[in-house]
Amino acid sequence: MIIAIDGPAGAGKSTVAQRLARRLGLRYLDTGAMYRALTLRALREHIDLDDEERLASVAADMEVGMEHVSRRRPPYRVFMDGEDITSAIRSREVSAHVSQVSSHPLVRSEMVNKQRRMAAGGGVVVEGRDVGTVVFPRADVKFFITASVKERARRRHREMAKDGHDVSLHTIQQEMVRRDYLDTTRQYNPLKRAPDALLIDTTGENVSQVVGRLSSLVKERAAREAR
Ligand code: DC
Image (cartoon, rainbow, N blue to C red; front, side, top):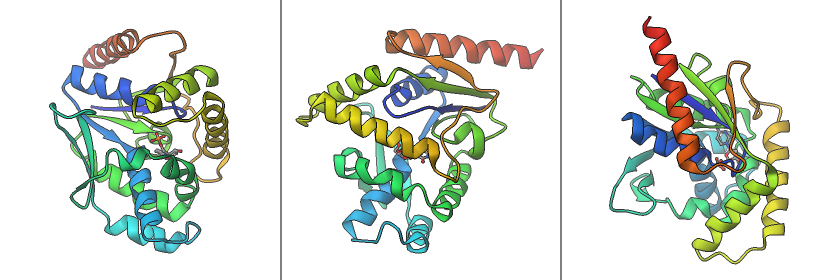
């Protein structure tokens, strides 16, 4: 089974996707982390972020993986060529440049190939922006998770404050609106809801409520397909 979860930044996708994967005994694949890893690498190596071919070739050679390590916080760790980059890819610098890196068609096609290879065999919850539309158009269940921009900014602000980042709510909301704009208006594989994706608005709901709702929907779908 492949469960595809898309939606804008800060909608709670990651938390929900991870919990859903644990609850259903499935693997978890965070495609945003892959674009972030490439962005981190490009910034470190001072690669021109408009050099599409160079970025695509780095993407092709780069090894990215995710592993669940229960004793660590957060437990899903992201590795790039053997290095744990879980925290490094969440920096504001990476967040500010990832839309630019992920806007290049060649980069996206490398990433999409990688994602399909990583999800081969199924049994996975995949999270991103184009997972239900482009990467896995035939996914068994598709969700489009969203929340109001105010609520999404509040959640991201809380998260960042917990990690010791001192940024105002206003700045975060502005950055989020900008990223939403870039993600939804880019020419190639923009963020949009697949026609057959179930729309889940998480405004005012906590994680357990959302995960419970999704898990029931997945089970219903599986039961229907088994009939
Ligand atoms: O989910 P996230 O905020 O970690 O994603 C980081 C960025 O990567 C986001 O601004 C858009 C991009 N992205 C993408 O273009 N396609 C995906 N499937 C996942 C993320």
